[in-house]
Length: 143
Image (cartoon, rainbow, N blue to C red; front, side, top):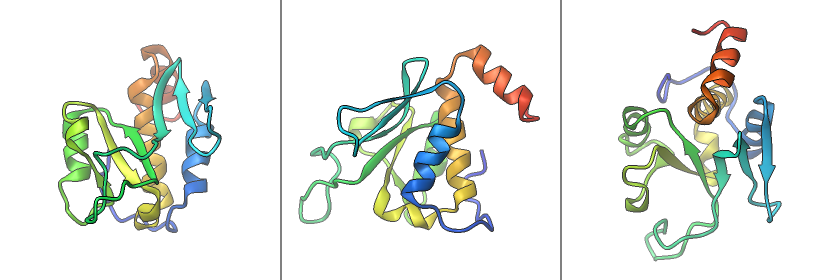
């Protein structure tokens, strides 16, 4: 995973996030609320739009209403994304020990489409079955 590398593609949008998640194989959407889809592979979430929660707030205590949770392959990958204070990725104490990062959609343009697609792909790979992940990697030249 190339962490916070400055790719030359254009700035990412929320539509790009949906496109990247939907483009992976065997993806289903679980969404009681169409504004907050949950993307799953094999019944396991890998990207979901979170409802406002008390652990993700601005300086005045207002809950962020635009948080997306993305799974990551490892704690090292998580730390690489959240340790730079300029990064749009963050975490909260609620997610300590959980293999995921948070991203506010209002900051999604701070990363490129290429980087976002890579992060979504890594999220999918971290949640897909071993066979599905192996098949996808074999088909895309990665091993």
